[in-house]
Image (tube, rainbow over all chains, first blue to last red; front, side, top):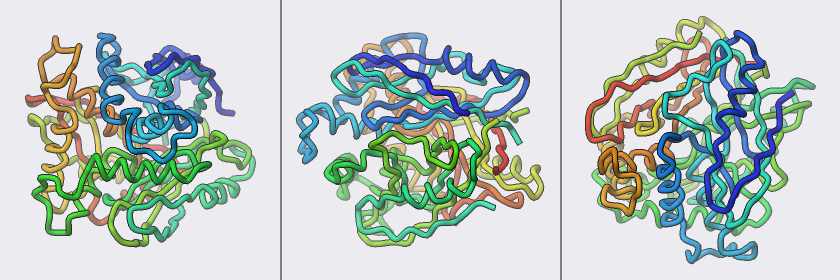
Amino acid sequence: MPSILSVTTHAKSATEITAQIQKEVARCGNSSGVAHIFIQHTSASLTIQENADPDVVSDLISWLDRAAPENGPYRHTAEGPDDMPAHIKSMITSTSLTVPFANGRLLIGTWQGIFVLEHRNASHTRQIVVTLLDEA
Amino acid sequence: MPSILSVTTHAKSATEITAQIQKEVARCGNSSGVAHIFIQHTSASLTIQENADPDVVSDLISWLDRAAPENGPYRHTAEGPDDMPAHIKSMITSTSLTVPFANGRLLIGTWQGIFVLEHRNASHTRQIVVTLLDEA
Amino acid sequence: MPSILSVTTHAKSATEITAQIQKEVARCGNSSGVAHIFIQHTSASLTIQENADPDVVSDLISWLDRAAPENGPYRHTAEGPDDMPAHIKSMITSTSLTVPFANGRLLIGTWQGIFVLEHRNASHTRQIVVTLLDEA
């Protein structure tokens, strides 16, 4: 069965989950394949980005706020001014990620980290489904 | 063999295909894995978004039109003013989606729906390839 | 084991790798499944786009430059003015792609090509991990 991770996020920020995904992959022993990571929400999303300088994810969050500002000409406003921008930010980033692994290790680059992006203006608990797929 | 779905779209709009994908997954019986959905076009694309309030996808379509307007400084204009914006919108959304399933059910969130985004200014028939992958 | 492709890119441009991915898939004989393509970098990315008119990818690169300009209000500037825009462009395009195949052939549309997008202002050698996944 797929695993479910619960991740607590903070308002408009990025939370790194690379270690949790690495732990799932380590259970697979020596096999090779692809880890599939899916977020069950449409106002938070996923991205793989540089995890060396924390200014990078901070600049990404700021750019998303400029690209989809809270005061845009939206019809969907009933859930608050941050909700429709959150859906736009989710659409242009990722609802799922797929990352290769071999011998129990994620095959990511030196500077790559896996992040949950919270697009709402408050902390949330986000559900993430992790499924491991075997290489052919 | 993968399945091919033909989806008829309308000009600059979103067509929900969650039920068709759920039907493909139900054929797999009790196994777990990931459904892979691929659109064979570059002027239409895919997204997973809220399917409760129809204003959400309408606002997403409007935002894409503002982000990639028809009157931009494009060189590729031979296929009409809506074609190059359609390629940009396709690039910043998704050509493929991957969605986990278990026991014949998609493991999507309560408000998540799977949509085909038509970026051209006319109705089209779009080909979508669905492949089911088993969990390791 | 997954394959690693080294791809030499040019400053702010798109390099097509469809033929290399097709070659990997051809090794699988008559099976069906999904090819998984992952780039181990966060300042270059992947996209599937029209490969008929070269103006299309040129317009995509120009649009990305307008969406994430070098003179933006970024904190992360230590790696040069093109680095933070490169991370933004990577986030809104794709770090991984998944493409269906059957009988040794990619199931892509007539006009679809697989491209590496180089977002930095210089040529780089980019590492790409290719993993083949069997259909259920």
